[in-house]
Image 1 (tube, rainbow, N blue to C red):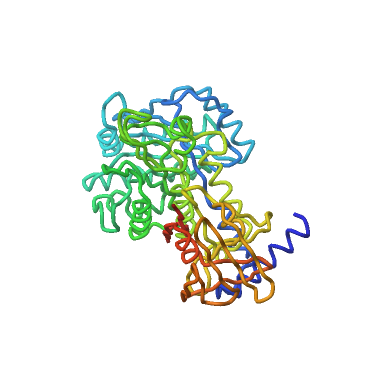
Image 2 (cartoon, helix red, strand yellow):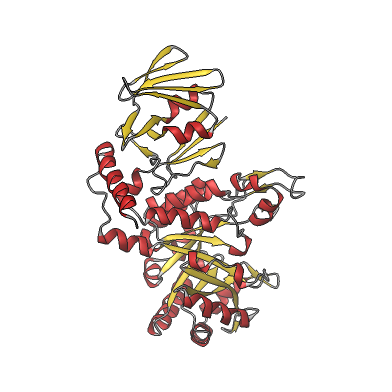
Length: 466
C-alpha cells in the first residue's frame, strides 16, 4: 500500500471519529480475527449442474459444499455423482486454502422426501452408527474437511433422534480433525417454527461447528426478502445459537419460475439490479429473486449482526462477469477488511436508480457515512455529476450551487439552511467539509432535485430513485 493511500485512510479514520462519536477506528486484533472468520460459502451441486470447475471463483470463497450424498434408512450412504470432479475440486480448493464439505440430504431423492429417511435411520441406533461410520469413511477417503447434514426438516417428534445423530457424527468427525455443519430452516419471526427449536437443541448446536439458514423459498411473492433473513438470524440467536455460528443463506435463483440469476442477467444486464421480472419476459412465470443490491444489503446486515458469514445456493447459478454476486460480496469484504467494526458500522452505501454508486479509499473522493445526527451524508461531486447535475463552488463563504434541470439548490458549508429554488428550508443536518471533500445531506438535496430517497437500515443503504 502506498504512503499516499495510507495517509488518506488515516485521515478518513481521524475525521470520521469526530463526526460519528465512535472511539476507535483502527483495526484491533479482535477485529482481524472476526474478519478472517467471516465465511463465504457456496453450494456446488454436481447432481444438478455440469459446469466446469474453472467457473468456480475459489479465491473468493472459504468453503464449498459439494452436493449431494444421500442417506438410506439402513444407514448406507449413496455417493454423489461425479466423484472424479469431487477429487479435482478438493485438490484445487486446498491449493487456495478453501475447505470442502460433503452435503448430505436435500429435500428428496428419487421423488421420496428424505425427512422420513433421516428419521427412520436416526431412530435406529445400529443404522445411525452405520451412517456415522459411512460418513466418516467418505470424508476421509476424499480428503474432505467436513460434512453438512441437510435434513429438511425435523419435527418435534424427531428432535431427540436429530440430536443423537448430530452428536454422534460430530464426535466421530472431530476425532478425525473434521467439521460438521447443518442446514436449517428460516423463520418469519423470532417466535416462528416452535418445532425447530427441538430440532436443534442446545446439545446439538454446541456439537455443530456452524449452521446455515435456508432463508429462501417462502410461499410468498418475494421468496427471499430481506426481512426474512433478519428474522431468521434473530430466531436462531434466540434459540441459543451463537451469532458467529450462524451463516445466512442467499439464493441465486428465482421463484416460481426457477430461472437462474445468470440467465436473468444474460437476458438483460439491468435485471442484476432488480428483484422481480414479470411473467412473459424471461419465463412463462414470474421471477422473484435477489438482485445485487438486495444481496449486498443482506451481507451488510449479516456483518452488522456479527453473523459467521453468508452462503450462496447454488454458485453455479452466478455469473462470471461484473454482475457476479460472489464478486460483489468479495468487494464488500475487501472494504470491511480495511477498517474496524466500529468504522464499518458508520459507513453507508448508495444506490441511484438501483445502481450502486461506488466509492473507495483509493479513489480519494470521500466515503458516504452516517453523521452525528444519524443522517446519511454523501460526497457531493460524484453523486451530483452521476445524475447529470452541475456544481459551482465559491470558496468565499464556502457556498455551493447545484443545478439539475429546472432546479437550483444553494447551501453553505456548516449551515443548516438550504435554498431550494430561492426558498429557504431548515435542515436537521448540514453540508460539511471533510478532508477537502464536500459532503451533502442526501435526502434534502435529492428530494429537491425530484428524486425519491429511501433508507434501508438493515443494509445501511440509501436508495435514490427518479
